[in-house]
Length: 329
Image (tube, rainbow, N blue to C red; front, side, top):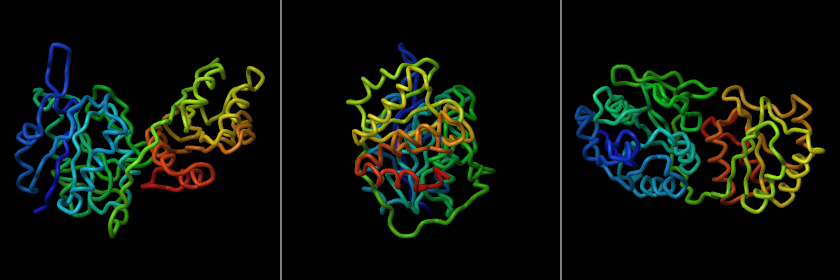
């Protein structure tokens, strides 16, 4: 029987009504008691490093989860992380870069309603997460939600209320859960050997969402406060010419300071293509501007945080363009 460690971190799945609204208040033991059927397929232990609404979960918490998994990697066959849905895609992406080449599954799940709600999706999602984690073919960082199994680097929350809250962006879900078993569409080659664990992230990464008329003066704030900049541009990607090309000039100055800029698109599907339009091609004159192409915003941000913790310049560009668990193509 597989031994699985559940890492409970809070979220809606572990929330109760309070005078201030829903808030995490349910222990890991209570969560497990709601899915007694998993005891027939796996032996489960649990830890609860924190109990937070995922709005409050960020880099230090990602690193804590990594620490727990690394410390227990040889003791368990897989890991289930219960997590709030709001930032689950960021956590899944971060874990994909911080734990690379894992032959064991690291499965994130949560719910849109508390486990104690009458019509909750929590019990199904939690049971599916354990059942997938116990499958012999499972490996790597995955999100299991509403019957879908999604790569940690391809997931995005696309709905705030519906049970099918997560989508796999521009890449198929790798499996669906049917009658307690994963039905695979894409299996991939299971890694062998030991995974590589990373222990640092550079949190000085900023996302700049372009809106019509935004002034390049925003760089007065950005220049001294961030090491990496992800620009969410319009359509296929580019920057506006207005203000006598001020955006291009300020971006060039940002890059000359040894900082890293990544261009992505606000469009959810099909990715960026810098060289398609003149407003994109002109970016080539600014210096080394990286392109996220088909990456999700969550993956681009997490990957940049990971890379900038130990690399910059040409090395950062090579690492950013190197695929990790099908994050970029």
